Length: 98
Image (tube, rainbow, N blue to C red):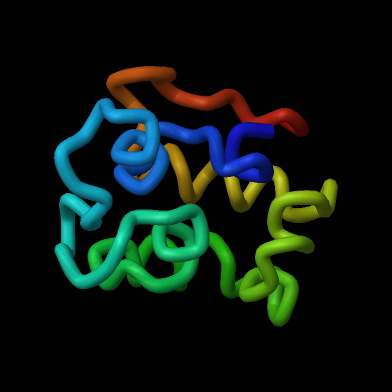
């Protein structure tokens, strides 16, 4: 849900609510760390994307589908866990279909 509403602890949101000095991505610094940047553009996570989203085909490159399709939930959770981006706050996310 947080990814869909952009109320997720990525730098863009944290900066908007005054909890981070900058919206810049902490791993690449190329652009603001938004949900689309984290999921699709950040070069730091390119290998993780290739491993976890490639089996989804085009759906793995579409934000709306990735965040709402039941078939995308397991790869999405695996991607999030493999990046370790939210580990400190949430720990490992359980696969909803495991």
